[in-house]
Length: 353
Ligand code: 5GP
Ligand code: MN
Image 1: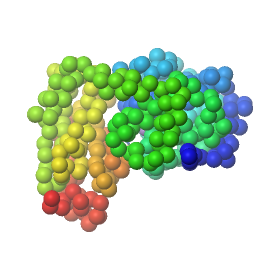
Image 2 (image 1 turned 180 degrees about the vertical axis):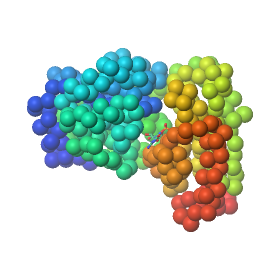
Image 3 (image 1 turned 180 degrees about the horizontal axis):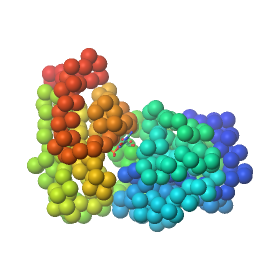
């Protein structure tokens, strides 16, 4: 039987907002992924079906492999249209923050968000929720913000309002945040949620094909290049590092989302427990870090200790202001200092196989 992590009391306040509020703005994190976009579009579609004036704002463009999602074309991109987005935020009655735990994650939209007098709700599954919200619905034990939106709608007594479109958005968020159900998806309850989404009409094979089988030739060649030329293995640290410069990405006609998943690949090597990916982000003039780990190795601590970031235990990110070479130096310094750590979860990296 489905066990809802939320109760009617948890959503009472939001239900109350729904009685008087008309304008809802849903915001999600920079570098929007399948869960960010899926959870946001699901909530937006639900609110629109209830007659609300609801919009989704992403800080920067979402990748093309999500463009088939119902409602995708109506998404506002802050970086492309900051004036319109700031006005939408300033006129909102309710601001909903999905799939992020601190306002710095919404980049340019954060100033308007913080100064707004609107009611603010966080619906998220990252650990350590930050301040700046009137209501915080935070469940790090769940696979995704999309799964949490499902719990949220059910706790509001709105199970029957979950249309095929809403279900498709939520399913896609769950599928992408669990790597196609290969991690963060051991809770049997999740499959009851998935079962009910399939019941609502989700075409799961189509969702998989849209997201995972829609690569360009150059993206596949980029993957080959990265694995052959750009992956360094630090055996004594059970760690892998991949770096990509802007020039290398240009050479492979790299589009938004084309580097997605690269960071996971070294974990396929026996004995590798942490994988780090550093890439030049010429749009934001900085180095972007992605990190993945297995078991109890805390890659979110690597991201926060050395790259001012954070995230989940096994999937995290951060940023670095400087050159790619300097970022690699920071990575090396980080590993070196971790080598001295007495923390058991970190020590696992340095145990002999
Ligand atoms: P990805 O590597 O897919 O970009 O991100 C993995 C996870 O880390 C996501 O859950 C994302 O929300 C989080 N994350 C990515 N970049 C950052 C960052 O710069 N700061 C923080 N705090 N979290 C991040
Ligand atoms: Mn997520």
